Image (cartoon, rainbow, N blue to C red; front, top):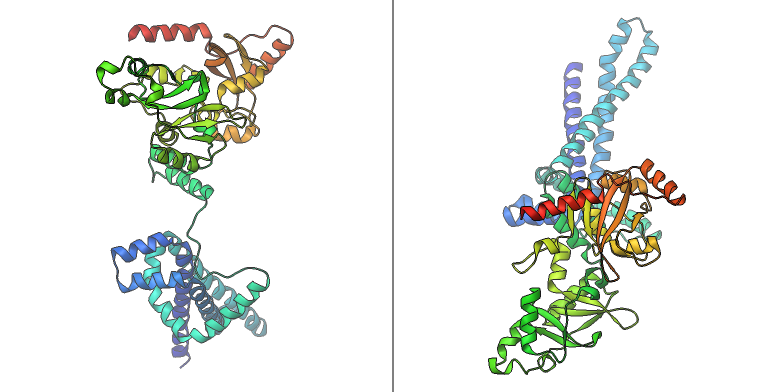
Length: 489
């Protein structure tokens, strides 16, 4: 009879441990699922299990309360059944090794409790938890039936406990939710994209494009625009023939029409407008008569608003005004697209002129108009925050004046050098040499990585009035490489 009871108790212990695992599994499976995955399963399979998982996800608070109740009941019952039966097996072993009967009885109960707890924890909690985390949808589909049956039987008790818990939560100013929030912040989505790319789930270029799209709303019109110093314009008294010649010469299709300068822009013309004018009238038709109005937005406008403005403009061109009312630059739909996709070349672009980054050994030839976030992404130099957006602006800030060709400057370290090293993989400094100016604008810069020791030596020599470029690839070598590249073409 004792053997029969022992066998029944062991079977009960196994079943109760499995039941504990079932409740633990449904708990981790439902909290680990995304709403989109559940909806996709309903649309794809559409069976009873899929709909049951969807209902449970929508009533998550009730289901999890039921799971907690189930875990509590089965765990207590497991201990009640397992402790005496395990003690019965342990007691003879202790007596066999010479432990006194009274002591053996007490020790066997303690050992039985420890063993039962370990078995319940491993097979009833840890193993189901890991399986549910690995395959949440599959676990939820198989566990949802038995768990829902349990919740139906104990529905009144579960709801009573849930109401009590919700009342207590409201007393501390928190409103309980029946469903997990499916929305994600930009930072969470960015982290998700990064982890997916690192795991190989996303191609690097796809991850980069998604990351740029997510961060686009954080940019401003000032960061997206083409600065006024590089905007090609036409005068209000220019003719349609001038428009055609300008389009052929530059490869651009749209031009602001101005009176004097960009601060007095009267509209915008498209090269196609020329073909709406009879050929015999093109030489004397002034552009001010065919120019269309051009919208103006502030330079502080965020990226999403910029996109809406460009899309609704009709002309696909908008002017950007600074805080003093002057024109800071111009934005086209191509500028917006390139902010997300990166540089896009068409058949009219001069690829060599448009290429902002060219690598020569360890050094880079970089346009002064390159934004610092692009510089960090491609070259690996992370600049500190400051009143500048471009590499040229950073160099001006460091020099404290308008640069000249052949000016040299040691670029400042990032606000967080450790983070910069972690992100770029480089732990040294960067040296810049201005190689070309476009009037007062920095046109081209040579960037070279240098060690901290080289940077300290350079600063010492500068203080002594004898600063020399410590770049690993000297300017003369770079010019020689550039000339050889041109000869090959």
